[in-house]
Image (cartoon, rainbow, N blue to C red; front, side, top):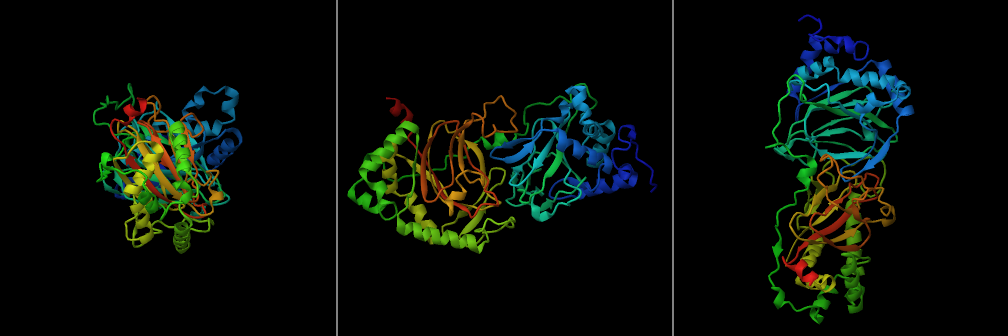
Length: 532
């Protein structure tokens, strides 16, 4: 085969992208690699741009652009605005970003879009809809599992601008992780492909609903994982290849999927409300086996009830009695030490860490990832039976003044560098009672939330914002935030439409977050009774 160029007019990309990228040989090789790639269609180009141009671009970015730290349940990243808006800058400002402007126009030129279409076989791409920004992932930054399915996106891409003089090391984190699917729409709990950042490297993949699940590993080194990332979109109205889209059957965004609450799989209490006995001496004796006696004093219960009725939430510090707490501290510390998660040192534990008899990883990761106790671990099984007991039901009723009619819950472990839950919305049509017992070692490290692990309640997406993202944490959406603590119980009435999540636990955390997370079903008419 000759080494002549493919039919691409390179007038717009001459001197900006690597010269040999568009030869027939190169195109054939990339197209083959793309078609054969796993776990879904993607490819990596080790050197995309002219090196001198990219050096100038990096210099302009670091000297002239402002980054904003954005953090939600799904990511923590420093980001610029949309680079599609460069055209609107005053001439003096645009001169400071002339190389970046040049590169942006090259990436969205007809020439390069033809190249992308040829390699991926994705069909025509829009030249009018530019969609790109610059992301700076520094220590602690991350992006959790999602599939990029939003609107008219066709191809996702990342161009890395890491420091060329200090090559990025895989142990610094920040790798792009690609996940296979168990079935369409359900990603596996662990990735099968990881792509560490590299100077001038270009990675792209076709946005495939229910398949293109990926994440960005937490950055744990001190370097700056700088990148330009964005999407090529399908042709817009008036462009060649435009087809009017129907909303019917349109794939849902990650946010829209997450807003759907799980089914009402509550276990009903066998004892009807009218047959319950209240906080009798026998009930209090049973509760004293595991609960701090301070919280069994009737005056304290009355005080807790007043707080809850006023605020719809209450916290109990030092909740377990000393005997049970000592056992819990011993076993949680032991497991963290065995799994090398008790130090908070540099490095991310490999996927699969913590799997042992009685503990498995629960996903799918586009909704959550954590470990759950399967009931074979005696101490944790004991805790589960206590939170599901009739006696604890009576104690809850005395505080919230509503008798739960059912429950569902799990004993969970959130491992540093791996685990989280993404925000889900209560869509049941009525409130639900969240009761969460949380335990961490070295609680002073968790107080400010910097290493994650906190539980956050927030106002639901209002339907008018981009369905790709949640409100940033410091905006008005946050209703309640509970830092991970040692031996603490929280009771929260979560209304219809309220979202909640457990923030990703950073690899810097000095151990796991352990919890017993239960939801209690309430009578259908309890809100009407409250109003009366």
